[in-house]
Image (cartoon, helix red, strand yellow):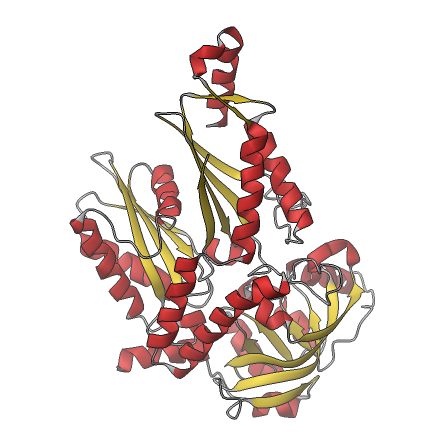
Length: 300
Length: 187
């Protein structure tokens, strides 16, 4: 995706009008990422807090209810104490929808986003959790690089989403390549079994993103995107909305409960994002997010 | 939240106390906790293998699997919730041999670790994952003990007051996480 920018940048040298009329400095996008990292790290999105409070009030298991009360308290305490919601301040995942009428100016977009991310993690006392190499494992000391996904879309708007994902829940990620004739029942079972096996590890109640279809990589990215759709929403297609509901019920019947201590709230929500697929393939990807779903969106 | 069903436990504690705790017990720990996560376990393993001596004594101590966020100016410690314990499973017997009596983290332990707890007389506590500010408020002091170069993975000595935890695995094979799932099957 980043290569795509470079190609367009080269074209721009010859013709500035080619890329469109709206000029945006990459520093402006970097600064927006900086601001979104701040709000995501310290303030639980209103919808997430409302979901936690609702589960706390409805939970019948005593330990589960106590646990949810602690999680609600924690969300109130973070801004009071000026400490991040979780000590795992996450990998920074950025979804960028870039209107093709936009003409980017300034330093490289990826560099700008990384520069401002490094500033945010330093200035807000966030934990830096990224190593430069997966096997040599030396911490970059900046929490960069970010993981940036860019789509070029129509128009002259920029839509930016910052999503902070902790390691504990990311490690519970699953991908299964189903037979293309598999029934929705098998997908429901796969999701519920995966969350049951993950048990306490991903810090439930989880927000469960499910990518169905596409190629394996597309399914995984769709699973990531799906949990950012909006906490209290269901799929616009009734077929998938029904499937989300079935998965939610199956996951909550596992009894894992809040942080694995037991109860009826194992998932706070289920979010499906589907994609066209090869005739031979039916990938299903699970993005298991902890109870601390930290993200923000902005339009530039 | 009522406090009356919570047991108050002073840390460090001995084997008798460890063996008296049962899976499902809600406890409030007051006293000392040592922090250690992946890199500290690796470093301790290397020192022991080379025949070296550790710069701290873990006999009867409780280990907290945590890598806090940096402490802002004027604060004792940053956000400090538990990390996933299973990553430390392969190095847990080493810690038990050093005399560790309790471990605090989040998530399941291996069957091997669960059996070692009975053998050595130690317990595994779960605390509240993702309640990092709530738990930070229970930490009354923090002192760097070793491996400063490991940053958030260095070994710190915390003093805590009424730090909440639940006994997940006891010395008799009890398992709170398994019990939670079994409860739902019965319903």
